[in-house]
Length: 210
Image (cartoon, rainbow, N blue to C red; front, side, top):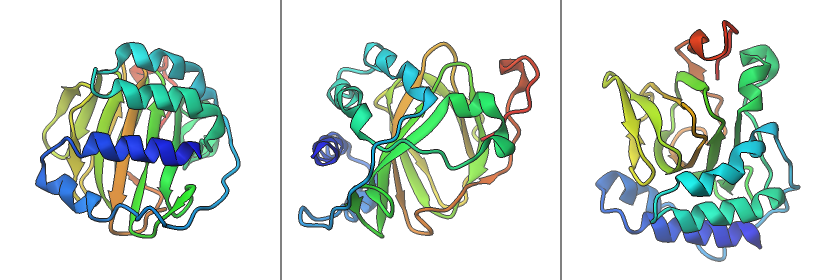
């Protein structure tokens, strides 16, 4: 099963990081005999940029990126929001696919893990949620906003930790962004609370959020 191979590759990659915050997530990783569910593949417009990801990956993240690219058509890509929420342009450049969690092929009610994909020149506005979160950018250099720290450029292979309810945002330039995400605690299927507006300079004045 493709999801199992990707989950194993993700777990192997994460094991190479020595951070206390990450250890809490890995303790929740489902056992090999955790229940599996059938999830029908689903494509999204944002996948048009996925083929660019290997060229902007780090050496240590490239194997997992290659795996996502190879198996993308077998994954269920989804969106938390609708066009009425944030506009069509954002939805054309945004999507995620869950491997582990309440909706993914590997069942867990303690941990969610999957991939976020953003197209170029888009902003995922400031938002927060009850779940504690870790992101690991896999491909694409992007700007990340974390709490009161201000915008900071992050490269593939740099772990980013968001405690519960911490505001965070991302924005891409010319490169797409593929990132691994982990959620624990709270509602693993919660819709985020948006607390910031998208940068209208990126879309010629459209009113897009995420």
